[in-house]
Length: 317
Ligand SMILES: [Zn+2]
Image (cartoon, rainbow, N blue to C red; front, side, top):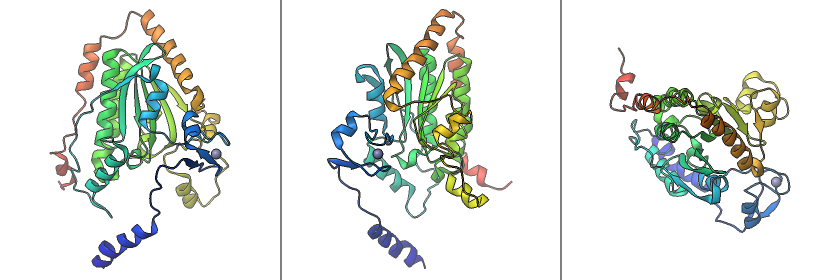
């Protein structure tokens, strides 16, 4: 059986899965099937010109489209212990990490940058779905905390673009720990009276929806984005009922009061700039901005990812 599952199955899977298509000149829209010229699509911010489908984009494209003159600095993110649980499913977690790193060129699934947004300082974090489904692990948790710290230091708003399949199961409880840790970091940001703006992109699900993705002072989404805790397929199979059209999509959630705005990618910069400008002016007018060293200290006091102690939690007593 071991021989079958370890040797034969992976080989069959490898044969069965389609090879990654090379960077073609044409991209097929996953929604309407239209063939789109690569350059046209890039110029249109990866939105299909036929059906307006918003395709997934990575941190670099987001930053370039948002920061003034496409100028920004990414920050160095804290190192975390790699593969603390020595996890392995059909593949070693270490190998999955290596693959994701070589595919995206990033260390993990969230990149934080700072720069000017229509003249105002802003810290922007972008979660990359291409990196292991954007999953929330220790590195992503640290990145969000680092982003919040930087925003407090710069007295700037924190804007977070979320995209995730949920928590990174290969890190077990340590990934779930990031839900309260990031929540505390966001709370510190709020205590410093700085705006936290969330832009939910397709798809934002699981533990990410259950933590920082829903804590924004302003909740924005891109059109058509799937936003949920459990996905529609799981719900349908559980309740054995057909779900309504557009269930858990951005427009549906806007209608139900879960979101403040659904914003087209072409209007994203302008919208964010307007919000940042309004809130920044308010900050300038109000002299009573909370003492930042205290808040910074408070953020520092968020318990570290103490992986040395982690195995103790699995021991019984
Ligand atoms: Zn299309």
